[in-house]
Each structure stands twice: as C-alpha cells, then as structure tokens.
Image (cartoon, rainbow, N blue to C red):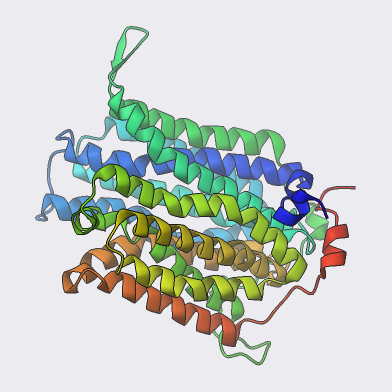
Amino acid sequence: MNLLEKLGLRSLFNTDRRIFTLAFARMADSIGNSFLIIVLPLYIGSGVVTGQTFGLGVALITGIILSAFGFLSTVLQPVAGYLSDRTGSRRIFIVIGLVILTVANFVYSFAESYALMLIIRGVQGIGVAITIPSTVALVNELTDDGSRGNDMGVFNTFRFLGVAAGPLLAGGVIGAGPYQLAGLSITGFDAAFYVAALGSLIGAILIMVFIEDPDPEEQDAEAGSDIGITVFDHDHDTLIDPVFALGLAMFAVSIGLVLIEPLQTTINEHLDQGAQLFSVEFSAFIVSQVLLQTPVGNASDRYGRRPFILGGLVVLVPAMLAQGLVTTPIGMILTRLVQGAAAATAFAPAFALAGDIARSGNSGTTFAVLTMAFTLGSAVGPLLAGYLVSFGYVVPFAFTALLSGLGALLVYSQVEETHATTAETAGNAQPAGQD
C-alpha cells in the first residue's frame, strides 16, 4: 500500500472527469455566492440601500433579506428535484439555475432599495433550489457503488474550497475599489457583484460544454413517482425513513457550521480578540472539510458508510460544547478544526449512503431531502444563535451539541448500512465512466 492509498487519495486521481467538471462548476459558483456572505451586509450597511423598510427596523429587514435566500431555496428544492426526476434532464436544470444566479448576482449592482434587495435575494434562492438537487443527483448517477463515497468527497471538497475562497477574495475586491475600466468607475461593491455573477456563469458554461445527461434507458421506470418527502419507513424494520433521518442529522451539522457567524462580536469580546482571529476560527472548519472530505469518502467505499456518519456526529457533540467553554483564541481554533473534521467524517458518507438507497432516476427527489436540510440549517442557524445567546454565552453551543447527539441517535437507530464493499473489492473498483 503506497502513500496515496494510506491517505485515501489514490481514487482522487482516477475520478471520472465528469465528476471533476461538476466539482469545478460547483466551486466557481460557490466562490461567487460566498462572496455575498461578506458583501451583502456591508452593502446594505453602506447607506447605498435606502427606502421603505415596511415598518421594520433596518437590522431586522437586513436579517430578513439575508435569510430569504435559504428559506425560499429550502421550500423549492424538493419540487426542483422531483421535476428533474420526471424529465430526466439534470443538465438543463443545473444550467437554468446557474443562469438565474448569474442574472441575480449582476442585478445587485443596480439595487438601491430594501424591496429590490429582497426580491433579488429571493430570485437567488430560486436559482440555488433549481441547481443543487440536480447537481448532486447527477454526481450520483455518474458514479457507482464502489466509488460513490470518493466521488461525493471530491465534489464536496471543491465546493468547500469555493466557500472558503469567496469571503477571502471579497474583502480584497471591495477594499481595492473603486476601479477604472474603459473610462468607467466601478465601485468595490459593484466589482464584487460582477465577480459573483462571473462565478455562476463559468459554472453554467462548464456544464453546457462538458456534461451530458446519463442515458435515459438506464433510468428507473419508477423514477419521480412521488413529490412528497417520506418521513416514515415502510420498507424496513425502522420507524423513520433512513434518508429523512440523514436529513435531520445534516440539519444539525449545518447549524453548527454557521453558528458563530452572528456571534462574531460576542465571541471577540469573550475571547478578547480581533476580527482577524475570528476569520481564522471561522476558516478552520473549512480547512478540515477540504482536507478530509475525499479521504473519508474514499474510506467509506472500503469500510462502509454508517460507521463514519455515526462517528462524525458523536465527535460533534464535545466539539460543539467545547466552543462555548474555551477561553482562548487557540482553543476556539482547535475546536473548530475538530468540528470540521467531524462534519467531514459524516458529510460525504451520508450523501453516498443516500445515493446507495436512491433509484437511478429518483436521485433528485432523494437528495433534495439532504440538500434541503443543509440549506435550512444554514438559514436557521444564525437566527437560532442570535436568540439563544441571550440566555448565556454557552447556550447556543450546548444546544447545537444536543442536536448533534440526537442526530447520532437517529443514525444509530434508524439508518442501516447500505454498502458491503470490502477493502479488497473497493480497491479494485473502477470509477463510473472509466474502462
């Protein structure tokens, strides 16, 4: 066994090029969208956006604008996944969603009222809802049982690279403005919106040029038969449908990811630190994700999905609680690294397990449960943290640790192993699309 095999990276270099294309497209899109995590609050607070606040305070209307994206996307993802199953056209859904995002990101540069900002943010949510379930479903349909964990890991590695790079680049783009281009003056904010639009556009072009839908004859005849989300399991001995149980677990993971975003001021005061150290703490989670997604996904192809999902959720419990107890910046950085490692251990295997369960033409509906849960957690997390911290600094961290523990209990009691590939057979498996 050579070094690459020990690190779980050997399959990375044998991954189907179509998976890499989808991953790069998702990374480009993620860079653009994560720009807005930094840009939108600064843009709204800069005084450019004015007008009717509908009787609400500026802080509250800003929160509603930022949250509209996640909530609208959450509602529409199951519908988009179902429609992509019914048509069997993953590619066109992805392209349409990315084009909508491109237009929305560009139009931000003209928005000067709260009402228009809210509308654009909602349109962004629609674009993401159309894109995400079909993208993950297509990754699933281009892989096989012997490499699904690895391929999901590769896909998510590049996605998190985009998420990490976006905020870092956004600050530089805004700070270096205004720009002079062809005799025109472009503000730092407008430049950031153009970069976000460019990221989505690059993703759409990559999909259009390099990706085709799988052969329709290979799709399941029962595909897309049900638009609803299955809560209770009627096919096994467990009470709750395993994909729904995984969705609840991913909801907890997602809340933990964004929990510290609205608590920046409180955390900085508690740890006696500045904004730079907070950025390092926030990024520590992403670093673990980028480093571990592919090795863990590859390992789940060898040793099964469930142990990794369960182990990651169990480790999340002390990791989250510790963040509310540490008193130094280095302590927070270390706990965020552990949290990221635990989340990475659960994330790719959870999507791979859902892929093992999904019928070939029903992937959109199946994965919409997980992507919806993750998006909803990202939207609920900041609101939940802002509310719970009023009861004490440690409370939001302890509550999220409790959610992670409940997620582990659900996986332990309601999710069965789906992957029986051994180390020997997995090592000989060919990635989908390879001869």
